[in-house]
Each structure stands twice: as C-alpha cells, then as structure tokens.
Length: 518
Image (cartoon, rainbow, N blue to C red; front, side, top):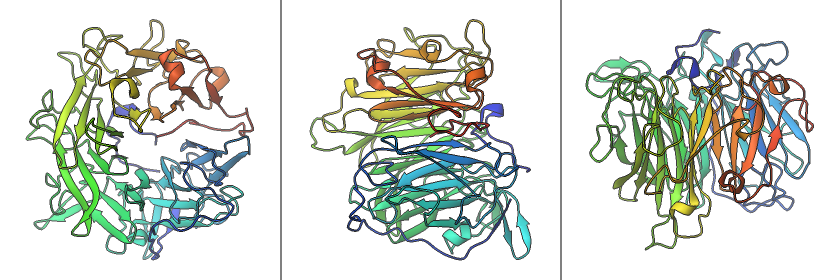
C-alpha cells in the first residue's frame, strides 16, 4: 500500500478497505462500575484490579495480509493472552496489506463500566466513500473490555474520521489515528485525543496539505482542533503534521508538530500545550513552544523535528497538595551538534496552569559528564518517555525519570544497535545519574545490527518498558518487549527483567515487529 514519506528516514514511527460509517461516539462521565469490574487500575481490561500489558505488532501478517497488523493483550495475574486484529469477530473491517493496525493505541475506561477499553489506530486503512477508495485515510477501533477479558466477545466500535466527527471529512492520506492519547481528566471525565497529521487545513481560500489536526473528545464535547482554531499558536502550513505525536496527563495534553517551519527553516518543529479545561467548546490552548521560543534553549534549524516525540508526567510544586503542573519532555531527533548531523537532543519543560513555562533542561550527548558522545545519526530523542515515580509527594529529582531512545546508536562492534539513555532531568548535573542501556549491558539479549533499540519506549511509575520490534537476534527475531522495574534500572534492586516474546509465555509464535509500544 502506498503511503506518504515518513518524517525521519528509515527510523520514523512504526509503520484495506473500510466502509465509511456515519455513527458518532460520546464519551460519558464514569458511571457506577459493574459488580464484576474493579475501577481505578489503568490498563485493566477485565476489571480485576490487576494491570494488563498491551503489545502491538503493526507489521504482522494477518490472514495472509502482510503488514495488516495486530495487538496482543497479556492479562495480568497469568489470566491469558488475547490477540486482536481486524480479523477479530465484531470488527467492521478485514485485514489487508499495509493497514498498520496497532500503529498507535491507548487505553481508558470510555464507557465507565470499570473495565478499561482499548483504542487502536489503523492510520493506513483505506476508506471507501461514495464508491471512491480513499487511500490511507485511516480508522480507529474501540475494543471494549469485559469481566471475562477483551477481544472475542467484546463490543467493538469502528470509526473513520467523518464517522467519528460528523463535522469533519474523511480524505485520502489523512492518517486518522496515527497517534492516540486517552485518559481521565482531573474532574473524572474520560478524554480521547486522536492525531490526524495528514489532514489538509483550509483557510484564506487555500488548502495546506498535511497541515494536520486532532480530534478531541471529553464527555459530550467533540471538536476538531488545528492551528487554524481560535487561540492555537501558529498557522497551518504545508507539511506541519500537527498531531503527529501526542502526550497527556489528567490536566494537560501536548500536540507535536515536527514538520513546523520556523521562518524559512522547514521541519524545525514545534509543540502546542493545552489544558483539558474547556473554553468556547474546545480545550484551552496554553502555549506554543519551539527552539526559538523565549526561554527555550538552542535555535530552530531546518530538519530538527522538535516535537517528533513528546511525553508528559505530573509535577507537584512544594506549595501545592496535588500535581498542579506538568513536566513535558520533547524529543529533537534531527538536532545537529556542531558539525555532527542528526545526533539529536531533548528538552524538558515545566508547564503551569496559566501557561507559564520554565525550561528545566535542554541537552544532548555532548553535555559534559553524560555517558557516550554525540555521534551522527544517533537520532537521540526519536522517542522520549518521562515519569514521576511517586505522584503522592512533592516532586524532586529523586522521583522523576526520563528514558530517551537513541535508535541509531552504534556499539563498539555493532552498527545501529540502538540504546536507551536514562536521565534524572531535575538533577543539577545531568551526568550525575545518567546511564545508557544496551542489549547485553543493562538490557537482556545480544545487540545486533539494526536492532534500533530505543525506537519503542513507555515509562510507567513502577516499570520501564523497552520494545525492540526490529530485533535481529535469533532468539527474538520476531520482536521482543522488556519490562524492567525502575529500582532495577537505578541499581537499588535486582528483581529481574520480564521478557515478552512470540513463542513464550503463552504468546503465539508469530510476528514481524512485536514490541511496538508507546
């Protein structure tokens, strides 16, 4: 299936026919949990109070269709493994080559029954509208959790963009569902953000291809937001790809625009931060950030791709009793360090409810004392994942961790093996506690060429999740996911790493890029 060029060469995000639906969706406020479900645990699809694990393989062959994609859900407590694809009963779709089911996913309790529900993005799905095939228009599916699990027997809702939001239009190459973020606001209302980075935005009589937008839902509010929307910083431009990356907490969310041009500097990139507080029927825009924004280090340069990846975690100041603020991590994988191209970098920024912001750190591998060094094509920041390991206390350096993917990193003997760089971004000196994890050094397995370790990361409050979907190691050549407690990463415990791979632990022995997460 033909798709448009991804933003960062061969290391961009992991990359059929779907009949356009006219149905809509309303995410209601939480209702009383079903008697057999226990609300309150994230990623708990059977509502038993134990967290479950979602692992995607968007390149998997399904019913003979290459790169149709699937996701697998490992139920916590040893309750089994479920495989979900467009071949699952109840899907208003069929697996086809290049669909990319599982390119993105998010989990939250959409219907308030106490069981988490899984939203899966299929951005390269073709949609048939009025007899015309709209290539790579994209769809999402919401697979509802039940007390007996998720997948077969679940209610499944499928939406094209126009089916999801009747005020929008389904078009070819929109990539609806390329990025997803979901959760619950501070007021207890479920929300969902859907990235549509290929959306063409029209204003002033001109349509700007690939300017991008998001679809935002909170309770009964549903709205399409772009840089043309009231109060949103910047203007829509060709190739901005607003909505390419997403992050969020219960109070804020961020939208990455890695194709944003700053002056004549194309693909310099930017990020817009919103509050979930609704104003005028839409989330409140707080601030737009780029490397030329006052107080943000560095300078906007062509090809930096500031905002290619974003991640957020709550921040509690010493004068508050809750996480009123947020820490935003921004990946800048195209950053040049002097004459070293695409070495990459990261910025960490504190955002306050007013939209005031403070850069906490801006760094790359050339910073004194930091492990490793700045090397061409490391793409540091291709993926970032930040977490507060104890949200119940005042935030300090001791409880904030940042994992940074460096998928182009070479070892002494292996090219493009990749690495995950760990930081405490609130440290006065970033080199004090940083470390690089590679396969065979901090991570299980043996590094092999073009593993691209660091392309797939999630930071939970307890564990670090490292997916290596492109693993070439014979034992894990269908992909692998490592789950490591932060205390093990810190070196204070030796609990051990949990390994998920096809053919072990009840997982089917099949896959192409198993381990795509985040």
